[in-house]
Length: 419
Image 1 (cartoon, helix red, strand yellow):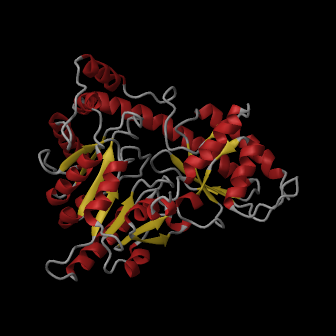
Image 2 (cartoon, helix red, strand yellow):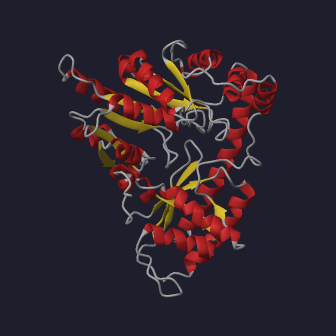
Protein backbone atom coordinates (compact mmCIF):
# COMPACT_ATOMS: atom_id res chain seq x y z
CA UNK A 1 0.00 0.00 0.00
CA UNK A 2 1.34 3.42 -0.94
CA UNK A 3 1.87 6.00 1.77
CA UNK A 4 0.32 9.45 1.49
CA UNK A 5 1.91 12.02 -0.78
CA UNK A 6 2.93 14.02 2.31
CA UNK A 7 4.65 11.01 3.85
CA UNK A 8 6.39 10.15 0.60
CA UNK A 9 7.73 13.67 0.14
CA UNK A 10 8.57 14.50 3.76
CA UNK A 11 12.30 14.55 4.45
CA UNK A 12 13.74 13.14 7.66
CA UNK A 13 16.00 15.14 9.96
CA UNK A 14 19.45 15.45 8.46
CA UNK A 15 20.89 15.98 11.96
CA UNK A 16 19.38 12.75 13.27
CA UNK A 17 20.79 10.93 10.24
CA UNK A 18 24.30 12.21 10.97
CA UNK A 19 23.92 11.32 14.65
CA UNK A 20 22.86 7.77 13.78
CA UNK A 21 25.97 7.27 11.67
CA UNK A 22 28.14 8.66 14.48
CA UNK A 23 26.51 6.31 16.99
CA UNK A 24 27.30 3.39 14.69
CA UNK A 25 30.97 4.45 14.58
CA UNK A 26 30.98 4.74 18.37
CA UNK A 27 29.46 1.27 18.63
CA UNK A 28 32.46 0.02 16.66
CA UNK A 29 34.79 1.60 19.20
CA UNK A 30 35.58 4.91 17.48
CA UNK A 31 36.19 7.92 19.76
CA UNK A 32 34.11 10.73 18.26
CA UNK A 33 33.63 14.21 19.73
CA UNK A 34 29.97 14.59 18.81
CA UNK A 35 29.13 18.27 18.28
CA UNK A 36 26.00 17.57 16.26
CA UNK A 37 22.88 17.37 18.43
CA UNK A 38 21.46 20.50 20.04
CA UNK A 39 21.15 18.75 23.38
CA UNK A 40 22.96 18.47 26.69
CA UNK A 41 24.80 15.57 28.27
CA UNK A 42 22.90 15.41 31.54
CA UNK A 43 26.01 14.26 33.36
CA UNK A 44 27.79 17.46 32.31
CA UNK A 45 24.74 19.74 32.44
CA UNK A 46 22.19 18.30 34.89
CA UNK A 47 18.86 20.06 35.25
CA UNK A 48 18.48 22.40 38.26
CA UNK A 49 18.46 20.44 41.53
CA UNK A 50 15.31 22.23 42.68
CA UNK A 51 13.50 21.34 39.46
CA UNK A 52 14.59 17.70 39.70
CA UNK A 53 13.42 17.47 43.31
CA UNK A 54 10.16 19.15 42.40
CA UNK A 55 9.49 16.58 39.67
CA UNK A 56 10.13 13.71 42.09
CA UNK A 57 7.83 15.27 44.69
CA UNK A 58 5.10 15.84 42.10
CA UNK A 59 5.16 12.16 41.14
CA UNK A 60 5.12 11.20 44.82
CA UNK A 61 2.03 13.39 45.17
CA UNK A 62 0.41 11.44 42.30
CA UNK A 63 0.34 14.33 39.83
CA UNK A 64 0.05 11.83 37.01
CA UNK A 65 -3.34 12.45 35.40
CA UNK A 66 -4.08 14.53 32.31
CA UNK A 67 -3.08 18.18 32.65
CA UNK A 68 -5.33 20.90 31.20
CA UNK A 69 -4.84 21.02 27.43
CA UNK A 70 -3.44 24.56 27.63
CA UNK A 71 -1.25 23.88 30.67
CA UNK A 72 -1.52 23.87 34.45
CA UNK A 73 -2.70 27.29 35.63
CA UNK A 74 0.05 27.57 38.26
CA UNK A 75 2.65 27.16 35.51
CA UNK A 76 0.98 29.65 33.21
CA UNK A 77 0.97 32.14 36.07
CA UNK A 78 4.65 31.48 36.80
CA UNK A 79 5.46 31.92 33.10
CA UNK A 80 3.50 35.18 33.04
CA UNK A 81 5.53 36.47 36.00
CA UNK A 82 8.78 35.19 34.45
CA UNK A 83 8.07 37.01 31.18
CA UNK A 84 7.20 40.22 33.00
CA UNK A 85 10.29 40.23 35.20
CA UNK A 86 12.84 38.94 32.68
CA UNK A 87 11.63 40.60 29.46
CA UNK A 88 9.13 43.27 30.48
CA UNK A 89 6.50 41.40 28.45
CA UNK A 90 2.96 41.36 29.85
CA UNK A 91 0.92 38.31 28.83
CA UNK A 92 -2.13 37.00 30.69
CA UNK A 93 -1.97 33.49 32.11
CA UNK A 94 -5.64 32.90 31.37
CA UNK A 95 -5.75 33.33 27.60
CA UNK A 96 -2.39 34.44 26.15
CA UNK A 97 -0.04 31.65 27.31
CA UNK A 98 -0.01 27.98 26.30
CA UNK A 99 2.10 25.13 27.67
CA UNK A 100 3.19 22.19 25.50
CA UNK A 101 5.61 19.28 25.40
CA UNK A 102 8.65 21.35 24.45
CA UNK A 103 8.81 23.93 21.67
CA UNK A 104 8.14 21.73 18.63
CA UNK A 105 4.35 21.41 19.16
CA UNK A 106 4.23 25.18 19.65
CA UNK A 107 5.98 25.86 16.36
CA UNK A 108 3.81 23.35 14.51
CA UNK A 109 0.63 24.73 16.06
CA UNK A 110 1.59 28.29 15.08
CA UNK A 111 2.03 27.14 11.49
CA UNK A 112 -1.33 25.35 11.59
CA UNK A 113 -3.07 28.31 13.24
CA UNK A 114 -2.01 31.01 10.75
CA UNK A 115 -0.88 29.33 7.50
CA UNK A 116 -3.12 27.74 4.88
CA UNK A 117 -1.84 25.21 2.33
CA UNK A 118 -0.07 27.02 -0.48
CA UNK A 119 0.41 30.25 1.48
CA UNK A 120 3.80 31.86 1.70
CA UNK A 121 6.10 31.42 4.71
CA UNK A 122 9.29 33.46 4.68
CA UNK A 123 12.31 32.36 6.70
CA UNK A 124 16.10 32.72 6.55
CA UNK A 125 18.63 30.03 5.81
CA UNK A 126 20.33 28.63 7.66
CA UNK A 127 17.52 28.04 10.15
CA UNK A 128 16.11 25.07 12.01
CA UNK A 129 13.26 22.98 10.60
CA UNK A 130 11.16 25.70 8.95
CA UNK A 131 11.50 23.89 5.63
CA UNK A 132 10.09 20.73 7.18
CA UNK A 133 7.13 22.52 8.77
CA UNK A 134 6.38 24.03 5.36
CA UNK A 135 6.44 20.52 3.91
CA UNK A 136 4.01 19.30 6.56
CA UNK A 137 1.55 22.06 5.68
CA UNK A 138 2.24 22.07 1.92
CA UNK A 139 2.99 25.75 2.44
CA UNK A 140 5.12 27.75 0.03
CA UNK A 141 8.39 28.06 1.92
CA UNK A 142 10.51 31.00 0.73
CA UNK A 143 14.07 30.56 1.94
CA UNK A 144 16.14 33.73 2.21
CA UNK A 145 19.90 33.19 2.04
CA UNK A 146 21.84 35.14 4.66
CA UNK A 147 25.46 36.28 4.74
CA UNK A 148 28.39 35.60 7.08
CA UNK A 149 29.16 39.32 7.22
CA UNK A 150 25.74 39.72 8.91
CA UNK A 151 26.45 36.76 11.20
CA UNK A 152 23.92 34.79 9.13
CA UNK A 153 21.07 36.86 10.60
CA UNK A 154 18.48 38.08 8.07
CA UNK A 155 18.16 41.76 7.32
CA UNK A 156 15.09 43.79 6.41
CA UNK A 157 16.54 44.47 2.97
CA UNK A 158 16.92 40.73 2.32
CA UNK A 159 13.40 39.94 3.52
CA UNK A 160 11.46 42.89 2.07
CA UNK A 161 11.18 41.66 -1.56
CA UNK A 162 9.49 38.46 -0.40
CA UNK A 163 6.94 39.41 2.26
CA UNK A 164 4.15 40.75 0.06
CA UNK A 165 1.20 38.43 0.63
CA UNK A 166 3.11 36.19 3.05
CA UNK A 167 1.21 34.62 5.96
CA UNK A 168 4.17 34.10 8.29
CA UNK A 169 7.70 35.38 8.88
CA UNK A 170 9.63 32.82 10.96
CA UNK A 171 12.52 34.25 12.98
CA UNK A 172 14.77 32.90 15.72
CA UNK A 173 17.24 34.67 18.03
CA UNK A 174 19.64 33.49 19.34
CA UNK A 175 19.62 31.53 16.12
CA UNK A 176 19.82 27.80 15.74
CA UNK A 177 22.20 26.84 14.06
CA UNK A 178 24.55 29.83 14.25
CA UNK A 179 24.51 30.96 17.88
CA UNK A 180 24.26 34.55 16.63
CA UNK A 181 21.65 37.16 17.56
CA UNK A 182 19.80 40.13 16.16
CA UNK A 183 21.24 43.53 16.90
CA UNK A 184 18.69 46.02 18.19
CA UNK A 185 18.91 48.09 15.01
CA UNK A 186 18.56 45.13 12.66
CA UNK A 187 15.50 43.75 14.44
CA UNK A 188 13.94 47.23 14.59
CA UNK A 189 14.26 47.49 10.81
CA UNK A 190 12.53 44.13 10.36
CA UNK A 191 9.78 45.17 12.78
CA UNK A 192 9.19 48.40 10.87
CA UNK A 193 9.06 46.43 7.63
CA UNK A 194 6.32 44.16 9.03
CA UNK A 195 4.34 47.13 10.33
CA UNK A 196 4.66 48.79 6.94
CA UNK A 197 3.50 45.64 5.15
CA UNK A 198 0.49 45.16 7.40
CA UNK A 199 -0.64 48.74 6.76
CA UNK A 200 -0.96 47.86 3.08
CA UNK A 201 -3.37 45.00 3.74
CA UNK A 202 -7.08 45.58 3.35
CA UNK A 203 -9.52 45.44 6.25
CA UNK A 204 -10.35 41.80 6.91
CA UNK A 205 -7.24 40.58 5.07
CA UNK A 206 -5.00 38.31 7.11
CA UNK A 207 -1.96 40.18 8.46
CA UNK A 208 1.65 39.08 8.24
CA UNK A 209 2.42 37.27 11.50
CA UNK A 210 5.83 36.83 13.10
CA UNK A 211 6.82 33.53 14.66
CA UNK A 212 9.55 34.53 17.10
CA UNK A 213 11.50 31.60 18.52
CA UNK A 214 13.47 32.77 21.56
CA UNK A 215 14.05 29.39 23.21
CA UNK A 216 17.75 30.31 23.72
CA UNK A 217 17.13 33.86 24.92
CA UNK A 218 18.42 33.29 28.44
CA UNK A 219 21.73 32.02 27.04
CA UNK A 220 23.51 35.15 25.79
CA UNK A 221 27.11 36.05 26.46
CA UNK A 222 29.21 39.11 27.23
CA UNK A 223 27.79 42.37 25.93
CA UNK A 224 25.38 40.62 23.56
CA UNK A 225 21.72 41.20 24.46
CA UNK A 226 18.51 39.54 23.40
CA UNK A 227 15.82 41.69 21.78
CA UNK A 228 12.25 40.87 20.81
CA UNK A 229 9.77 42.50 18.40
CA UNK A 230 7.09 43.43 20.95
CA UNK A 231 9.43 45.29 23.29
CA UNK A 232 10.93 47.19 20.36
CA UNK A 233 7.61 47.85 18.63
CA UNK A 234 4.59 47.36 20.95
CA UNK A 235 2.19 47.66 18.00
CA UNK A 236 3.44 44.23 16.87
CA UNK A 237 1.88 42.57 19.92
CA UNK A 238 -1.19 41.54 17.90
CA UNK A 239 0.96 39.93 15.19
CA UNK A 240 3.80 38.21 17.10
CA UNK A 241 3.61 34.67 18.48
CA UNK A 242 6.51 33.63 20.70
CA UNK A 243 8.10 30.23 21.20
CA UNK A 244 9.97 29.71 24.48
CA UNK A 245 10.45 27.20 27.26
CA UNK A 246 12.79 25.56 29.74
CA UNK A 247 14.43 23.04 27.42
CA UNK A 248 17.60 24.96 26.67
CA UNK A 249 18.13 27.51 29.45
CA UNK A 250 17.66 24.83 32.11
CA UNK A 251 19.28 21.98 30.11
CA UNK A 252 15.88 20.27 30.41
CA UNK A 253 15.38 18.98 26.88
CA UNK A 254 13.89 15.70 28.10
CA UNK A 255 11.63 17.34 30.67
CA UNK A 256 9.50 18.60 27.74
CA UNK A 257 8.05 21.83 29.08
CA UNK A 258 7.69 24.64 26.57
CA UNK A 259 5.58 27.77 26.59
CA UNK A 260 4.21 29.89 23.81
CA UNK A 261 2.52 33.25 24.11
CA UNK A 262 0.90 35.81 21.89
CA UNK A 263 -2.45 37.37 20.95
CA UNK A 264 -5.36 35.60 22.62
CA UNK A 265 -7.17 34.81 19.36
CA UNK A 266 -4.17 32.90 17.95
CA UNK A 267 -3.21 31.26 21.25
CA UNK A 268 -6.80 30.03 21.60
CA UNK A 269 -6.52 28.29 18.23
CA UNK A 270 -3.14 26.86 19.21
CA UNK A 271 -4.69 25.41 22.37
CA UNK A 272 -7.25 23.50 20.31
CA UNK A 273 -4.57 22.21 17.95
CA UNK A 274 -2.17 21.12 20.71
CA UNK A 275 -5.09 19.56 22.57
CA UNK A 276 -6.06 17.45 19.58
CA UNK A 277 -2.43 16.41 19.10
CA UNK A 278 -2.18 15.49 22.78
CA UNK A 279 1.12 17.35 22.80
CA UNK A 280 0.90 18.73 26.33
CA UNK A 281 3.77 18.53 28.80
CA UNK A 282 3.56 15.87 31.54
CA UNK A 283 1.64 17.16 34.54
CA UNK A 284 4.29 16.41 37.20
CA UNK A 285 6.91 18.29 35.18
CA UNK A 286 4.53 21.23 34.77
CA UNK A 287 3.86 21.39 38.51
CA UNK A 288 7.59 21.28 39.26
CA UNK A 289 8.44 23.91 36.65
CA UNK A 290 5.81 26.25 38.11
CA UNK A 291 7.50 26.12 41.51
CA UNK A 292 11.00 26.43 40.07
CA UNK A 293 10.26 29.47 37.89
CA UNK A 294 8.82 31.23 40.94
CA UNK A 295 12.14 30.82 42.81
CA UNK A 296 14.14 33.75 41.43
CA UNK A 297 17.28 32.89 43.39
CA UNK A 298 17.33 29.29 42.16
CA UNK A 299 16.78 30.41 38.56
CA UNK A 300 19.48 33.09 38.72
CA UNK A 301 22.00 30.73 40.31
CA UNK A 302 21.43 28.03 37.72
CA UNK A 303 21.54 30.43 34.77
CA UNK A 304 24.82 31.96 35.95
CA UNK A 305 26.36 28.51 36.21
CA UNK A 306 25.19 27.11 32.88
CA UNK A 307 25.97 30.32 31.00
CA UNK A 308 29.50 30.37 32.39
CA UNK A 309 30.18 26.77 31.43
CA UNK A 310 28.62 26.99 27.96
CA UNK A 311 30.44 30.23 27.20
CA UNK A 312 33.76 28.73 28.30
CA UNK A 313 33.30 25.78 25.92
CA UNK A 314 32.24 27.98 23.01
CA UNK A 315 35.17 30.33 23.63
CA UNK A 316 37.67 27.47 23.70
CA UNK A 317 36.39 26.18 20.37
CA UNK A 318 36.31 29.67 18.88
CA UNK A 319 39.86 30.46 20.02
CA UNK A 320 41.09 27.11 18.71
CA UNK A 321 39.74 27.85 15.24
CA UNK A 322 41.10 31.38 15.31
CA UNK A 323 44.52 29.93 16.15
CA UNK A 324 44.28 27.54 13.20
CA UNK A 325 43.26 30.47 10.99
CA UNK A 326 46.29 32.47 12.14
CA UNK A 327 48.50 29.51 11.18
CA UNK A 328 47.22 29.66 7.61
CA UNK A 329 44.50 27.01 7.67
CA UNK A 330 41.40 27.81 5.61
CA UNK A 331 39.07 27.92 8.60
CA UNK A 332 37.15 30.56 10.50
CA UNK A 333 34.59 30.98 13.28
CA UNK A 334 32.10 33.65 14.34
CA UNK A 335 32.34 34.97 17.87
CA UNK A 336 29.95 33.15 20.24
CA UNK A 337 26.96 35.33 21.10
CA UNK A 338 24.25 33.02 22.41
CA UNK A 339 22.71 29.53 22.53
CA UNK A 340 25.01 26.48 22.61
CA UNK A 341 26.32 26.77 19.06
CA UNK A 342 29.40 28.04 17.29
CA UNK A 343 29.46 28.82 13.58
CA UNK A 344 32.57 27.32 11.99
CA UNK A 345 34.01 27.50 8.49
CA UNK A 346 36.17 24.66 7.15
CA UNK A 347 36.76 25.68 3.56
CA UNK A 348 38.42 22.62 2.07
CA UNK A 349 36.05 22.05 -0.84
CA UNK A 350 37.95 20.60 -3.76
CA UNK A 351 40.78 19.25 -1.64
CA UNK A 352 41.89 15.63 -1.91
CA UNK A 353 42.20 13.13 0.92
CA UNK A 354 45.22 10.82 1.30
CA UNK A 355 43.02 8.07 -0.17
CA UNK A 356 42.44 10.15 -3.30
CA UNK A 357 38.84 11.21 -2.62
CA UNK A 358 37.94 14.76 -3.61
CA UNK A 359 35.91 16.63 -0.99
CA UNK A 360 33.13 17.90 -3.24
CA UNK A 361 30.51 18.91 -0.64
CA UNK A 362 30.23 20.15 2.92
CA UNK A 363 28.99 16.69 3.86
CA UNK A 364 32.21 15.21 2.43
CA UNK A 365 34.24 17.56 4.63
CA UNK A 366 32.19 16.64 7.67
CA UNK A 367 32.66 12.90 7.24
CA UNK A 368 36.35 13.39 6.54
CA UNK A 369 36.63 15.16 9.91
CA UNK A 370 34.60 12.41 11.59
CA UNK A 371 36.86 9.63 10.35
CA UNK A 372 40.20 11.47 10.47
CA UNK A 373 39.85 13.96 13.34
CA UNK A 374 37.24 12.25 15.48
CA UNK A 375 34.97 15.30 15.49
CA UNK A 376 31.45 15.56 14.09
CA UNK A 377 29.78 18.83 13.05
CA UNK A 378 26.54 19.60 11.17
CA UNK A 379 26.86 21.20 7.73
CA UNK A 380 24.66 24.24 7.16
CA UNK A 381 23.17 22.25 4.28
CA UNK A 382 21.11 20.50 6.99
CA UNK A 383 19.55 23.92 7.65
CA UNK A 384 18.63 24.83 4.10
CA UNK A 385 21.84 26.12 2.50
CA UNK A 386 23.67 24.59 -0.45
CA UNK A 387 26.24 21.81 -0.15
CA UNK A 388 28.77 24.19 -1.67
CA UNK A 389 28.90 26.31 1.49
CA UNK A 390 31.60 25.11 3.87
CA UNK A 391 29.97 26.40 7.04
CA UNK A 392 29.06 24.17 9.97
CA UNK A 393 27.26 24.17 13.31
CA UNK A 394 29.13 22.97 16.38
CA UNK A 395 27.04 22.23 19.48
CA UNK A 396 28.89 22.13 22.81
CA UNK A 397 26.18 20.75 25.09
CA UNK A 398 27.45 17.17 25.10
CA UNK A 399 31.17 17.73 25.56
CA UNK A 400 33.39 19.15 28.29
CA UNK A 401 35.61 22.17 27.84
CA UNK A 402 38.67 19.97 28.37
CA UNK A 403 37.61 17.59 25.60
CA UNK A 404 36.96 20.51 23.25
CA UNK A 405 40.53 21.67 23.67
CA UNK A 406 41.75 18.19 22.73
CA UNK A 407 39.90 18.30 19.39
CA UNK A 408 41.88 21.21 17.94
CA UNK A 409 45.19 19.33 17.45
CA UNK A 410 43.26 16.45 15.83
CA UNK A 411 41.55 18.83 13.42
CA UNK A 412 44.89 20.42 12.56
CA UNK A 413 46.48 17.05 11.86
CA UNK A 414 43.58 15.98 9.64
CA UNK A 415 43.61 19.20 7.61
CA UNK A 416 47.37 18.93 7.09
CA UNK A 417 46.81 15.64 5.25
CA UNK A 418 44.66 17.25 2.55
CA UNK A 419 46.15 18.34 -0.74
